[in-house]
Image 1 (cartoon, rainbow, N blue to C red):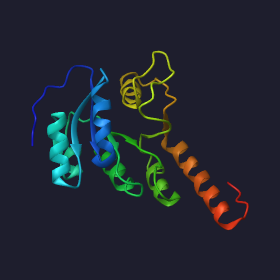
Image 2 (cartoon, one colour):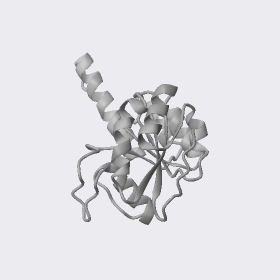
Image 3 (cartoon, one colour):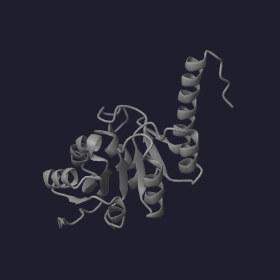
Length: 188
């Protein structure tokens, strides 16, 4: 389904993939003056259609088709953990900025497939709905991303780059292994 709406000057186009958790993020994007929700994608047609209609945006059951959009600047991925790698890689090939929910992935090998590919992406490092403490304060994570893209120098306490996300995953997995086995795990 197509909804024809002109992109306002200066607005960053966002798309949400994974609407179980991601649907609630659509309204957050729409709160941000610098951002515009342009499309949503879900594996299930019913959910994709309902969310697209609710937010008056285009909807897709094939995220690859959504990635072809010229007005899509950022892809926010809210699929289950373990389903980020292929989507991040496809978005990077399409020249899109990428935002993923945490954890970046479920294994270091899968995280490395993202990070080692030099994908320009961020992982949410804090509560996405919390206003930032930065000056000027951001409404939410989507404003942080929009500002960063607009000026390229905006630093955010709510975002972690791919390498930092990988390091965090390594620590979490080591802590889990230590708790499971009772052994001390050394990080490299």
